[in-house]
Length: 451
Ligand SMILES: [Zn+2]
Image (cartoon, rainbow, N blue to C red):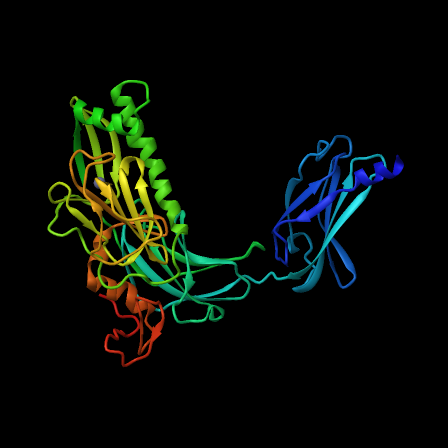
């Protein structure tokens, strides 16, 4: 009986994810389970035979962390670091975490991890290129990062953009690049920075030379009539209730936001390769009906009932025209997507993706590789569309950008490829590998060149 009791008092402990490096304030996630609950959690850093307490939480009178019988482990989160132990030096140490069970004996259990104390922030150097950035557009920066870091990229206001090893460079060189956007709705006084951080709480940022061209986006009025509302509501909210206008407004607001979140989430389905080559192509012979980031005022019976931003180009030809892939890539989405109707998304690598909406029919499947100008479907008016047209957009790491730049070969050379190109060589588009000088297509440009 006593033996059983003792056994059941044991607290099962696990630090997940494991902590290997401790800095000034490193988060710890402790998974713990004990049928009697836990009344105290304590953590120490042990170095050179000395123990420094870095965390304690105790509530003896009440059940601090209570676990029901057979309950799964609970997660207890806290942080440990040199903030609470200033005499601990960078180097090897042990992290000791101890729990006290809420039984009458106050049985203790420990989990001990070998850790490295590292309080130095990562070291960052951004490139010396000149970065001319259009508000709503894209740009590329290269940088070198060293020291202990686990996340590095570009931050523009509230948005962060991932980085990848420079093609042809070894990951261990720390030479990386980030393709980023200056989002259309980010204020023009925001300064983009390169950042690197680690889970021990240290972060470094570095500035780079840039000039932003603020853009004034257009405002347009879009009249709504009952026939259009009925068409949209029948298709996108068939079982819904409420009056026609409020059902439409829900689609135009809430569904639009959800669909844009789904598109943004596709950034994780990207290849770490340059899959594309040359300029992206626009739907041939098309008429431009709407521009990127047009603000639309929705008018119903002479009154403004809604306002939304249109994050793409509307391109029309005639009904049911073949829609071609704007560049080489891999299909990562091919299905209905709310307001976008039948929608295809093509990944072009390193977080660059193109989006095709309102298709009448889809001719490709997810996972399929497509070539530039290959037919991927036919134009239509599925989703939130009042007539047959292609809604075309592009996104950079989940942020929709003005595609007009990607249709421009000069812009691509000067703003994107020149920065990835080592002097005397070029990045081969198809494989993302380094091609030595002398190849017939070499496009090396001097550092700092800008147009
Ligand atoms: Zn559109």
